[in-house]
Length: 282
Ligand code: PAF
Image 1 (tube, protein in one colour):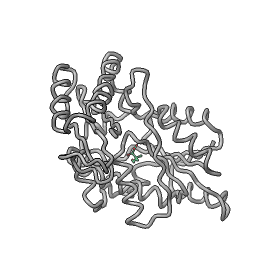
Image 2: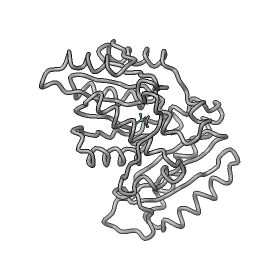
Image 3: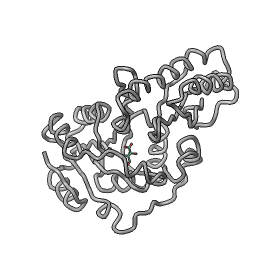
Image 4: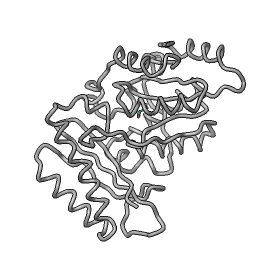
């Protein structure tokens, strides 16, 4: 397995091994790898000649300094996990200095309003940070395909917009959410939960499934109040938002339109640990 800690060395290496027909699959991550990440890598290996996985905790996408500081960093274990998946995977684990060259700031993007909804509303600047780093990583890796998990559905829509607006020649592949045995969506932040919190967090998906079953016969507003009440019963959780939105525009569903596809989105705090999940409703 090849590991690169700087962009210049990675670019030189990729140039030395790729031919004009080589396809490059890219899996950008912030490390603390779980089965969801591993599934992205399997997909990439299946569909491309070369697979690059990046591990970089991107400071500019954290609006909360405490979240950035406590974000799990497990590079050695991550490298072992990757080498167990395939010995040919190329790992890119750059430093902040290498990626930002002394200017750890994000570029400002216009994602046609997608950046102001849900995650964007509650995490100001988050999607500017994501856009900045993903664009930079795409410039370095020049992937044919890039793989992202559906748990961050809004992020995937934003990245598709980034690619469209900047005419980046990469295909964005969306992969299904991986869940723990209690159906908690896999996330690197789950590492920070105690065993009991992790067990109790199974309620998030239960609520989403119930919301889905209510969706046929109830308004979005009615489901919103039900979810709020349900989570208030359990003092471990604080609901940041629950929203039913149009999949294409991420606009809040006020009145259901049978020609549109809707999705429920939820963000919940357990202590200071923030978890998100999503489910398609129709
Ligand atoms: O989803 C993530 O882990 C991050 O937002 C990403 C896409 C790697 C950018 O830092």
